[in-house]
Structure formats: structure tokens, C-alpha cells
Image (cartoon, rainbow, N blue to C red):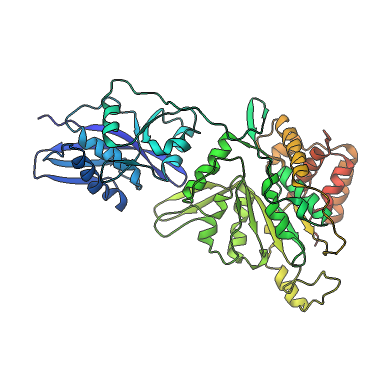
Length: 507
């Protein structure tokens, strides 16, 4: 018998990006054995037993030969039970030439031959599609409900290994038989791109009493994706405002919704495929690995990457470890996080809105009119010095909360604030901006943040008076641009720049 070496395609993840893996099969004379090579993890090695059982329970032949399955390229570590189906198909069709060698195969096998889903399948296929590497794929039928959101891929759903074999043997591949779903009935189209949003507000700003200035700053932060720190006494509403910001953030494109879903899968959770941005709030005792990602053997996704396109909220900000706060400077500046390990170097996107909440002093009563602060000057200084100037230089909005009074009343709702955010979002996109105002680079600031003459004079005067750094000036321009968008001004006016200056960090 001539040796036939077949190939099928699958994939493995490196960080959040998929790498194409060819599953090759060799069947030679010799003492019957079954080996999987190519840096396969333990869960892939266990596929041998699952594949054997699936084949035998479905009356399929297990050849009495020396079976070698190679996962190529061999210098990439592979993991995931989704390789089961490709390995079993390679054995089932060992003496037949496979014609559909560009077909991707994904699926875990049950001992009875049932094809099951895996949390890695969606991130793998989405990453392959983003790289334009995939056209057709055999997948578990149970995963079609989530995969149908990925456009441009022909998905062939199967329930068991026999159905998969029939697909492989057929001269032509069947076509997908489901309709592509929309993410929400609420959407706007700008420059031929639809953006989706929700209009329900589980946490509403109408529950926040008083705090006019803080809510205005929160609106600016949401509309322009500006980092913000809320400073105030315990119970003044810092966390209330932070948690409600999630529901008034700008609309999302379909690619952004899928990117959020991919990160959710990598966090071992089931995404809802709704146009709602993530909200991550790690505890101040969390380790650097939990926040930035990592691990001894394999770098795992952390809170910073999971907050991509959403909010990263640090409550009790000064209590976070100094290593964490200093390491946060990179994603705040570059919107990516790099994780280096002995065997790999991974990059995750980290384009988030950062919110920090802190007390004015360790006891929290420094700004109180009715309570006495128990902290010494050295304790207050040490508390504030936990936040370095380079870290604070990357924050655009600083707000001191008002002390709560009995007469305070609610004065706005999330619905009203969200309308303003969407209005500002449309203005930014219609100008041709890829990023929101808070994430503009130097070249884009010069192009989009154009000041009227009076506004220029005020900014120049403020620069001299307060010795503003280059980054501080850029931050003020970006905040002023968002305020101008909220005020429906095409250019940044004197009023816009004055309000932006009022949110700068005080020494």
C-alpha cells in the first residue's frame, strides 16, 4: 500500500491571535501505535483516547498501522480540545485522498463520536477571519448560534463524526444555511459603517443626587474616551458615577462587538453579543499578573486587555501596588500591553477609558465640613505620593466631588446623557476620526483640535502661568475638543478651553 499523507487545517492561539496549524497524518507498516507530535499540550495528547473511542463506537476502522499525527509548524505550542475532530478525520480517511485540504476543522469529540464546542473556537475563527485566512470551516453545530455573527465564512455545522466524514467526502462543500444577525435594533450609520447601541440603563444617573460638576466631567469622559480621577469623601458617589458610565458610552461597530466577544471567550465566559462595552473593576489587592496578564507557563489575558474598548475602574486608587500603577502607564499611553515570557512575547490591545476613585486622605474626611480629619500632614502627603506625576500626567480629567447634602436632588438621566454622547460621537466620526478625541495622537490633535484665536491666547497664557508640559497641553486640547463637540462647536471656543482647563490636575 502506498503511503498517503493527508492534510487538514486547524489553528492555535498565541495570545489573542490565531496561527494556522496543519494536521498531517502518516500511516506506515509496523507495530500498531498512535503518536501525536508537534509541541502538543496534554489536552491534545488526550485526543488519542477520545478519537479511538469515537471511531470504534461509530463502526469506523482504526488501522493496524503505525499512526503519526503531526501538528505543523512544530515550533509553536498548541493547545485545545478543538483539534480532536481533525485528528479523528485524519485516521478515518487514512486510505483516501482528501480533496478539501483548505477546509478548517474545529471540534471536540465525545467518546460516542458527538462533536462538541470549545471556548477557543470563536476566538480562533474570528482571528483567522481578521487575517483573511479562512473561507470554509467544519464546526460543531452547537456553536453556530455564536459563529453566525462572523460574516464572510462558510460554516458547516455537524453533530457527529459521521456527518463530518460525509462533508469531507462530498465533491463540493455545502453552504451556510443561517441568516446573519444584527446586534441591536438601535443603530446609526456613519460613512457606510453601522454603529450599534442599547437604550436600557440598568444603572441610571438619575439615582445620583447632586454632583453637577462630577456628572458633567463623566459626560465629557464618556463622549471623548478621556481618563478621569474622582476624588472625594467616602459615600460621595464616586463608584456610583463610575459604574453608570458603562451604559452611556459611545456606540460600537460590529468588529468592535466581536472583539469584545473574543476577549470574553478568552476569559472563559459566554458573551452576549450586545453593543455594551466591558466594565472591569479589579480589587486593589490583585496581583500584577491578574491585572496585566501572564502566568508561569502560558501568558493569560488580564484585566487590562479584558477592558479593551470599555472601562477599567480602579477604586481606592492609591491602595494599588506602585508596580501596578507604574506599569499602567504603558497601556494608558500606547493602548497596548506587552507580556514577555521565556517562550513567548504577546501583545494585547488595551484601548480603554480609565477611571480612578480615591479619598482625599487615608481617613477620607479631609474635605468634610462636618467630620474631623484624623490624618497627619505626613500621612496625607505619603498617601498622595503613591500616585506618581508620570502616572497622573496620563489622566485628562480631575474632579473633586461635592460633599453630600440632604437637599441634593437628581438632575439628569442616563438617557439624556447618552443622547449627548451619541451626538458627540457622530461629530467625531464625521470628521473622519478613527479614534475618539481622548486617544488622538500628536498629528491628529493638530488636525482636529483647532482653536479660535481667543482660545489660543487663553491656552498660551495658561501654559506660561502653570508651566504646563507638552502632554498636559495636548490633554487640554483633547478635552476641549470633546467639550466643543458636546456644545456643537466646529472650532474650540474660549468657553470650551476654559472649561477644559478647569479639569486639569492641581498641584
